[in-house]
Image (cartoon, helix red, strand yellow):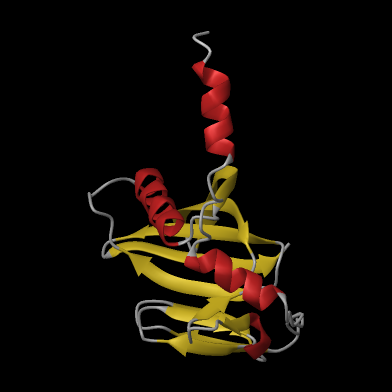
Length: 176
């Protein structure tokens, strides 16, 4: 009401747009050359042992990573960025998270979601946690969405299970 508001709006409108984050630049670069992933075969699965966990993966997918943290995906599900990094566009990440504070499954899962959002600011919560039974243990499933390296959006499902050595989790990633 002092008359300075309109002048302030004019000054703000003249500012340059904010710089894109490194991840936004990488997503834009990859979106220019997308490769559509193939769906896994429902008939052929291979058993994987990851040290403290085991599971079955589509036989046509490959495993990348170490003993306690794995990424499984078809080759075309991994996208190389201009700076030599790799983004997952289709597949799953299986790992363990050590919460900062000893807490229950829900709070440890929220802490993990916050850390994932710090490393990938485009991740947004789309579904409240739903309780699940995972191999006889209580688990939580949370829906997320983010920017896909193929361009557009991706849909992620986070599954967490509390274990004595931390929070076991899987993130399933796929283009929307």
